[in-house]
Length: 266
Image (tube, rainbow, N blue to C red; front, side):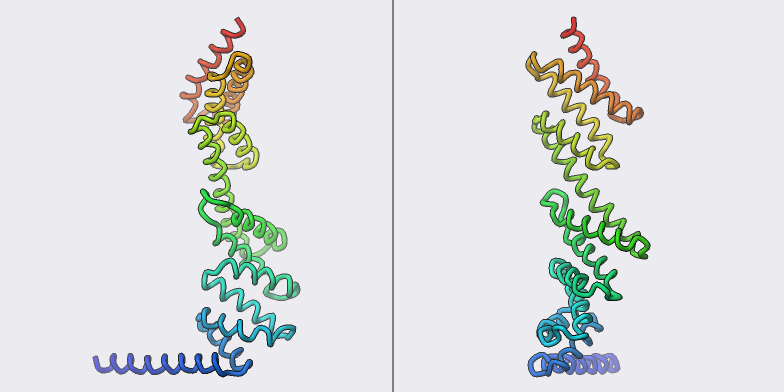
């Protein structure tokens, strides 16, 4: 017990001495002292402390060889403090400022990853998601053989799924509130934009159902054309998904569509 207390006491002394040294360098140290301390804090993963020092010394190292290392460490520090907006900005600046750097690939990857981590849930504005996809596309094009490619592709898949979900839910909302014309257009746009989407079968079903609801509610002058469009929407669902779980319900609706068409043509 005494030994444990002794160790805790010694650790506290070391910690206090370290904090005291940091504060002394922060407030009164020379530029070179601050640079040395900043790199120590960075290596110790004390990124908040490192950033305070880097911000102070950056003007003094502008245009000097050390600046490449400083800018990269600043970028990584912001990333590790989860300030992804600043991290992305500094990684992008690093890539622009040091196009021949050995760290260029890493910086390009982390720039895209910052946008990925900043991407919000699907129900809100997806500008950040689209920025992330563009950044990853640039990275994949520039480094097709990178060891980071599997991770990049996985993040692209997740980002893509988020956009698909948003597009599907917007179209589904049109259907739910009875805006069937808008729903038909939205489901069409969604399946055309995201060809391999997991929502494809469900989107085909709801497009048909929207077309059906639109046709049976139409005025006489528009009814025949819309009934035929509904019939074609059903055929597309059946052709692509002959074993669809939505087929039984769709077939029941199709019978009414065909009955309405027969009445008009008779």
